[in-house]
Amino acid sequence: MRIVIAGGGIGGLTAALSLHAAGHRDVRVLEAAPELRPLGVGLNILPSAVRELHALGLAPAVEGHAVTTAELAFYTRRGDLVWSEPRGRFAGHRFPQYSLHRGLLQQDLADAVAARLGHGTVETGRPVTGYTVNGSQVTVHTGSGDVEADLLIGADGLHSAVRAAMHPGDGDPDTNGMWMWRGTTRAAPFLTGASMAVLGDDRAKFVVYPIRPADATGNALVNWVTGRPADGPSAAQSLADRKKEVLAQFGDWKVPWADVPGLVAAAAQIHEYPMLDRAPLPTWNDGPVTLIGDAAHPMYPVGSNGATQAIIDGRAIAWHLHKGPDVATALRRYESERLPATRGVQEANRRMGPERVIDLAWQRAPEGFERIEDVFTPEELQRISDDYASTAGFTVEELDADSPYGTEPSGGPR
Image (cartoon, rainbow, N blue to C red; front, side):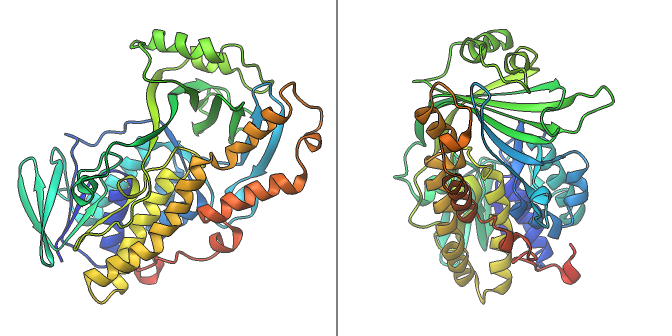
C-alpha cells in the first residue's frame, strides 16, 4: 500500500512510525518546511500518549531530555492554592507525564523515522496543496508535482490544506478572543521542581513549568504561557518590546514560590499567538483520505491535550489499518472511535477544562481566602478533575493497561 502523510509534525511522524510497526514500508511524509528543525516551545504529553511512545520504543530517548511532571497545581493570581494533584507516575499511573520542548520531541520522532523507514522518508519543502480522489486511489497535489497513493493522511495542522479540500466551506479558525505570549527562561525550579502550575483570575492566566531538567548551575529551562483578552496582535516586534507588554499586565503578580515578572524579564524568547481552534467536523474521511491531529480536531491549548491526542491518532489509524479488511472499513472504524473522543476534548477545552477552577475561585472570592473549603467543597473540586480526566482518557483504569493499538511483534518496534 502506498501511503502519503501530509505534514511532518508530531502526529504525522507518530503515524509513520506506527504504520511501519504494523508492517507498512511504502510510507512518504511530505513536509512543507524546508527542513525539520527543533523549533517551538514547551508542551506536555499526558500518560495516555506516553504509553504509545513507550510502545514505539521511544520512551528512553524522550525521557533523556524531558521533565517527568510531578504535579499540576492551580493558584489565584495572589498565590492562593485552589487545587493540586499528582500526575503520571506520581499519581500511581503506570506511565509518566512529560513536560518537554516541542522541537526536541519532533526531532526524536524524525530520527526514529529516518532509522526505521529510511532517510528519504520525510521529504521537506513539499507542501501538500490538495488532493483528487479517483475511486480507491488518491492523487496528492504538492507544490512540486503530484503523488499517487492508496491512502492520504492529512496531518498538516491547524491550517490544513487536506482539511480545506475535504471541507471547502470550513472557513477560518475560531477564536475565543484570547491572545497568548509564550516564552522560555532559564531559572531555578519551583515547588516540587517538576510542577506544572496555572495561576490567574477569570481574565488572565499564567502557566509555568520546566521543560528541561536543572543543569549544573541549578537552573532549568522554564516554559511559560500567558493569556489575555485582545482584539488582535500587539504592535510589539522586538523581544524588549514584548517583555514590556507582558510586564504591563503581569508585572505586579506576586506568588511566594515563583518570580513571575522575573521570568518574563529574563526570557530568551517570546512568541505571540491567538488562541484558536475549529468546530468539530461531521466527518474526517473522504474515500482514501483521512485526517489526524490538529488537521482533524484543533483545540485550545488547555489540559495538555493537543500533542497528546495527535500521538493517539497516529497510533489509532495504523492499528485500524492493520485490523481492517480494507482501507475504507479501517477509516470508518478509525473515525467512529476517534472523532467522538476528540470532540469531547475540544468541547471541554472550550469550557477551559480544569482551569475553570481558577475562574470560579476568583469569581467567588475576589479578595482572596484563608481556606479553599470556604470557596469549594472537596467534592466539587474532585468532580471537575474527574470529569476532565474521563473526557481526556486518562483514568487510572485506562492508563494501567497496555496500549490498545499494539501491532509491534513482542511489544517492540520493528
